[in-house]
Every structure is written in C-alpha cells, then in structure tokens.
Image: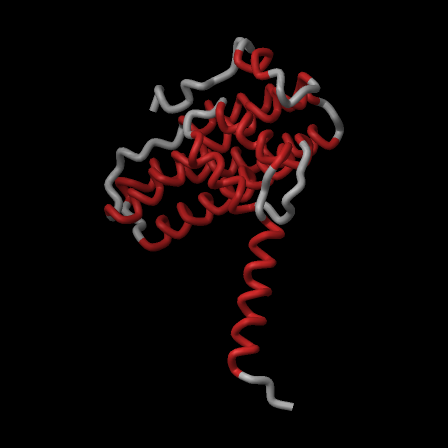
Length: 202
C-alpha cells in the first residue's frame, strides 16, 4: 500500500518535533544547568556544550557532572589527535618542540580527566577536586605562539578556549558534588582554589 506523500511529510514532521520535545530540558534540570553555567567564565558556551551532549531531558547533579567530565575527556582526546595530525602534515623542525609540548599536555589532560572520572565514581571527591584543578596548569603548557597554518592555529586556539571552559565547568560541578548541594553556590565561589579567572592568565 502506497501512502500519500502528504501523510509521509506530516509523519516525518511529527517524529522530528516529538524528538526535539523529548530532548527539551526544563524545570530542575535546566535550573541546575543554569546554576553551573552561571559560575563559569562563559555562560552561553557552557549551556551550549551541555545541551549539545544531552541525551535525556531529566538529569540530576551527578548525571550532569558525569556528563561534563566525559565531554572534557573526549575534547582533550580529540585535541590530541588534532595536534598529532598537524605534526604529520607540517613536520617543521622549528615548530615540532611546541607542538610536541601541546601533544603531551593534551595526553596528560586526557589521562587526568579519566582519573577524575574514576575518583568521581569512587566518591573520592577531595582527590577529584585536586586533579581537576591540576588540569589548568597542564593546559598552560600548550602555547600557540608558533608558526603553523593560520586555519589550524585558529582551531587550536579555539580548542584551547573550549578546554578552559570545560575545566571551569568541571570545577564548578565538582565542588557542587563535593559540597552535597547543587544550589549552595556560595560554598562554591568561596573555595580558595576556585578559578573563575581561568581566561585571565592566557
């Protein structure tokens, strides 16, 4: 039986709209996302990153924290691959040292966030926070003042900017978990090692 073309179009629109509604976040989940992102250096980018990776419209603090850690791990790993490709395509001896330093930095970022995820699952929140904060220093090793094609350089700078935001997001949600309440933001911002100034040192 051949279905009318109009019926197929309506059915496709229904499925598409229904899928969008299923992923639309609201209520406590959106409030929690807003609370996390309000304490970062880029509120809109933070929300964009989280919404892009959501696969359910209802998440609690632990779900969101686990998601943020996973995104940070994947971004660090993807950036490592990106830098490795630059090295293969442009093996300029003058720039190899800087690129290799960045390669090592993102290797360490990836392994540290894998460790953070393990500590999170083990509820070792004290160690988890220490390791999250250490990733800021690791990232600073990767400088972008070397000569590579401009388009690759811009992408590397942008990837570094996103990594900084992800570290910031990880610290915020990590402190929330450690403090046991996603809405006690005052207890987050008064932590001595909290780094809302993550972009100021670059």
